[in-house]
Length: 201
Image 1: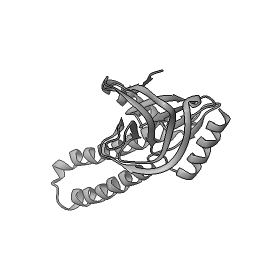
Image 2 (image 1 turned 30 degrees about the horizontal axis):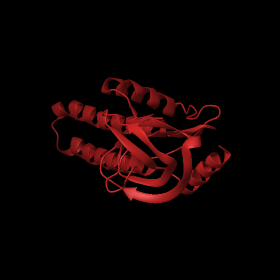
Image 3 (image 1 turned 90 degrees about the horizontal axis):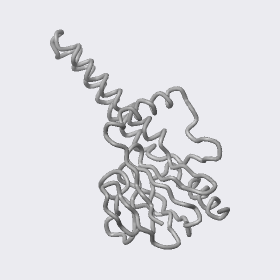
Image 4 (image 1 turned 90 degrees about the vertical axis):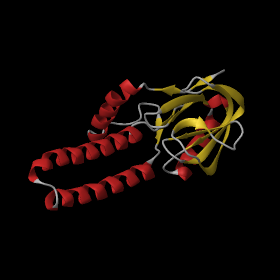
């Protein structure tokens, strides 16, 4: 068996982002029948909102007190684009969680990458916090046969397979993988849910 990392093309990202934003604003369910959503990137979304909110406040004061009136429409457009970008990021991470079914676990790094693991191949799940640079699904430096699955930075859970399997990354390279480190919003609840699914499988 070979696991394949799927990555959307850049041309598809904008369309998917707007679809996710529409679904997020209209509060459509994230998980379908028979699926359990395991959220990720909540802390990152909060950081983005705080940074953009602070920037909008500063930019607004700049617009009122410093900029000539002729420049203000362009400056307001820039502020609107910042707000739109932050909302698109939030929607894309919120609407693309890890998805657990009776037979599979789909790991997601937002819009960047996705892969699916059969639960019958999972030996166990444990909590472990690791951090590494980069984004998406990538090899974890300093950890043999390990992959990091985050939008950015930190993972809190490890899903370990019964045996190492070949995995084709989004860039086409192939590596042997046995452990998947993934970011989750609630490590305790996610750990419990995954353990239950693995035991049932």
